[in-house]
Image (tube, rainbow over the protein chains, first blue to last red):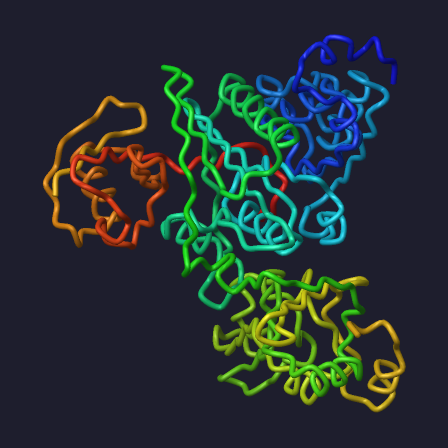
Length: 399
Length: 87
């Protein structure tokens, strides 16, 4: 880093280049808004940027993506955005991650970040990222656009107290939109289609500027104890700033306790869980991703539960209801996300817990969040004594 | 009570008389119908006089809405880029 590069910043009385340099930021989504956020962060000279996106560049992205060129079509957005941003300031450390952030972004990484920018384009991804940040206690800046308006929402999550979250201000209709993609059993609908919302570089650049500015100010002023929504009309310049109020029935944070212990553990259900259950009076265990617990045909009676037990339900679609043995749509499918510790040990020992993490209570005041390590194959080795012994001999449980 | 209801683009604005136990969601629905707002968008309600978001399922009185408060219907903006899951 050359000091001359940031000479103009140093003339601004509130601008602390060293504080900006210490930032370790995560940007989820390298589309229209993500491009602008990454560009702004790189030009400001932040220390680290971690970019998550699963998509490849398509020709229609080029009208809204300052970091992409025609020759980049077909390349992963995350890698291309990181490469171009490095050209803006080679001293900024930028790391791309290609894939679904739910699989590639760990809770541990979120905990060590100074803030997360949500630049995704659907409710489900926003809800998931919100829950990760709320659990981790890491500030979240949510950015959204359409062809006229720009919104920035700042959630000052920390590890000492609960703060209003993204879902506190989300209307019930948003959940209905998410639900359209899933059957009532949590399986994906075959014909579910995403509604694509047209946008321009005008709203994405306006939103991203405001988002980065809001975060920059929090470095100078300290984090606010409230959560805020900034809503801007790019046609007229009108803007509102409103405080996002806590919703005591919020599905995202109403169960969240002020004190949370976050650990990583092997996803195999074994003896270490028994120890916790007996010693700490562990509460119900809630999975981050609902799991299959029963797949049985009413018509021919074949029970295929064993081959899919504790698999993530969203890995399957509605065709799972069709029995491959009798070709009838007659399978009974049970999907669950809440278990008791005793039940897991009794009925599922030796199997792997699916999903990203589990949440439970150690007591009335302390919440335990366990990030599940290892490959997620959702398939145990049955209830044999061998597999159980293998699980019990492990020392990588949540204790 | 009387409240002033408006759209985020400020092209629609009306003073309406509503019962104190009316829910924010009902106001949004009425605006959708009367003003023909796009139906394929989700909306939230903010009290711009108080500078606070509102809970759609709460009664206006419970949400601390007072006479002549100005309420704005804002679209919930969800576009931005893609990296979530899809088929």
